[in-house]
Image 1 (tube, one colour):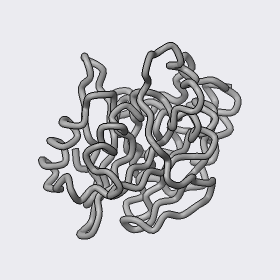
Image 2: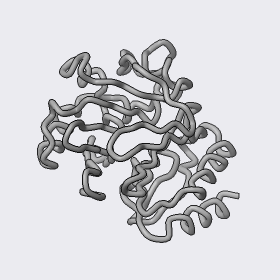
Image 3: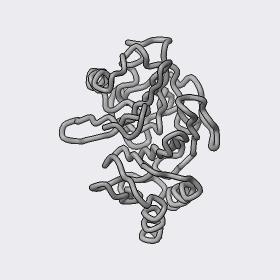
Amino acid sequence: MEVSKGVEMVELDFNGNIIYPTLLWNQEIAILIDTGFPGQIEDLRIAMERAGVSFDKLKVVILTHQDIDHIGSLPELLQVCGSNIKVYAHALDKPYIQGELPLLKDGHIENPPKGKVDDTLMDGQDLPYCGGIRVIHTPGHTPGHISLYLKQSKTLIAGDSMYSANGTLGGIHIPTTLDIKEAQLSIKKYLDLDIESVVCYHGGLSKGNINEQIRNNLSISN
């Protein structure tokens, strides 16, 4: 689903579990935010082609955090695209993504997906891609969870910091969040942003009165 020009919310189905990576692009480059479960590289390729973006245009992968449904197809992407792709993540989740430490929530999995992180991201950092991407460190779900604010379209890529249900923000998903209090502090950061749309990895797109929806969820969780 097109969120705005050059911003596509990709819908992937993994055994009935629907997830929503995000694809950004312009004339020069394509950027994928999160990679789905293991084995979904072909689904990603098809989704890119549907959006009119060739697979060889993909140059950057940004991982919001270490969970397996976000890093799952990273090894395959790196195998296919090799050194053409630059991978970003937060330093606190980097060792888990690279396989130096067992995944915090999926540590029981044998041979979990892993891949090299080329560069680490910091809170408040601006990436120069596709009109500017602001990095927001939003720990709670995992220590190194990040969200991304797309300046041009005023879109927040929330990762798993919040979920959405039927187009409405549902707040923090408590069962999968490691530190609830930290997660609450994290989503308060969003109130400083001018947000028109939110893409949640679970639940998809939410629009309209975003700050009000966030405040309502904070009051509920408190």
